[in-house]
Image 1 (cartoon, rainbow, N blue to C red):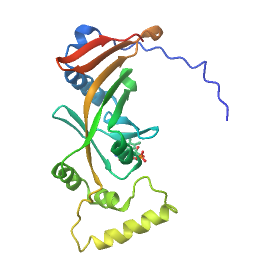
Image 2 (image 1 turned 90 degrees about the vertical axis):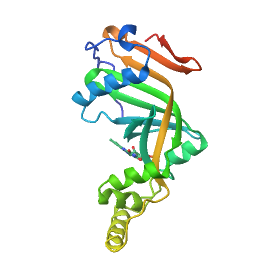
Image 3 (image 1 turned 120 degrees about the vertical axis):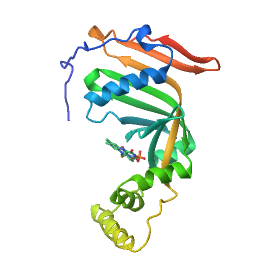
Image 4 (image 1 turned 45 degrees about the horizontal axis):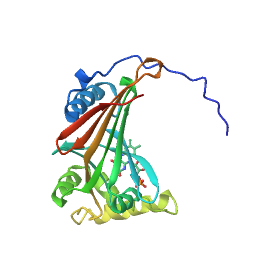
Length: 210
Ligand SMILES: Cc1cc2nc3c(=O)[nH]c(=O)nc-3n(C[C@H](O)[C@H](O)[C@H](O)COP(=O)(O)O)c2cc1C
């Protein structure tokens, strides 16, 4: 397959990001941008999670909570991402909000959340999702869709008579940010980029060249 896409060109004209607007607290700015994204994006909580076990690997996950200044998502601890995080807890989260011409990158350290926190979220999900999490050995190769569907049928029958228990290998990760970068598209590729890095004395704010 060949494609020449060089003629596609879009100017970013909607907003700007000054130091004054950015302030000194990246969480405040995240909150502001996230509130705006929730009004204009179909899936504002979707973020690309990049891990680097032996090689970099990216996939979309959903942000489920920001608490204690950490960003929480849920997954299968035995999945590819889970194995990567076990090897190397440094991860990167990326939000791209097309309608606002904005990107936020958060680099940080991922840690498993407590069993109680994983339980609380697991049991708040619809029963079908709970059974799905139990049925799926996420990231493993399977023989076909039928294998998964048969397993769902089998488990659904079993759980008609037994209580559902969260599997140990399913739960949350909390990412503690080390760096935030806020990117606002601007005309002629002269974008605004403001970075906050965690230091012992608080957040250091710097403007990056586009
Ligand atoms: C919109 C969207 C939301 C997703 N949300 C999650 C999620 O919250 N947790 C999760 O484990 N996978 C989620 N996925 C699936 C992942 O992108 C990925 O396929 C899966 O986690 C397996 O990744 P891995 O093999 O790299 O571990 C989502 C995918 C999309 C497109």
